[in-house]
Length: 318
Image 1 (cartoon, one colour):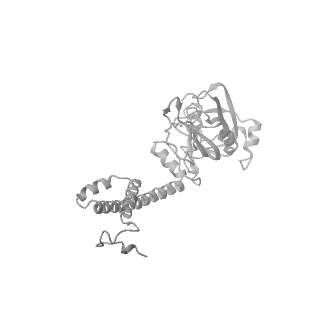
Image 2 (image 1 turned 60 degrees about the vertical axis):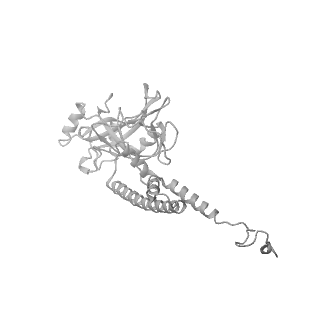
Image 3 (image 1 turned 90 degrees about the vertical axis):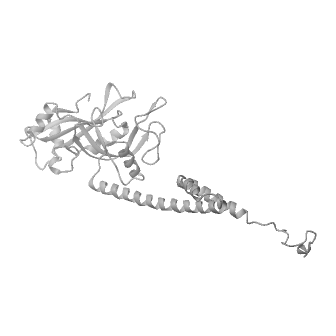
């Protein structure tokens, strides 16, 4: 972690005016604790993902009014702060990991300066609570190597690996929603941190979720999304069982065809060969053997009748 993400500030009259959009009464500066927070940036993070600058600009208005919580908890008791202002800033003289101009999405947030929040305020002031992570939803995830949108198309490249002189990472773009920011111990982004949420309404999003879980990457799911993921996995199990049944039936057909074509060979040999074949290979063999079998049944149109004398052409008379 190179820079802090939360810094103490003082509520200005302009801040109070914006904050009063969310309070039921006019509060004073003394009742509030105001702080600045860097939510996220366009650098490549620990998950080898980055936000596009366009995504940062799209998310800026989305985060206004959103809450600050602990470890992305859904409990209302863990809601401690609220964002009332956001902005995207270019960090002069600073570059991303791949030498692009460095942009950060920053925010101003407030919480009550009371006894309940005293320990949290002390930890922020002492620099203990300074790393944050955001939860948001993006519609596109573009591979740096092949430019495929991994939310819609399959990509074989693995984030973090080099392909020639290109580092593989995903650029997150097309922000659809922003949910909250959270105080965390180790964020994904080095400067701020981000935990990505998923829009389960998008096509092929389940394969993207399963892929990221398989890569050991952290994701955030609500209870409803977890239930949907469970149903999806159960559906995959059912599909796998059907596929196994289909393959078993194909294997039996191939073995039967082999037995018919080579009756003197050991049937165990056919079984062992069929057991290691893929479905496409089984289909190919099955169709090929059937076609070969049918071609052997075709007789010439002018075939001589059995038992007829070689010089007897009476069967061809009209």
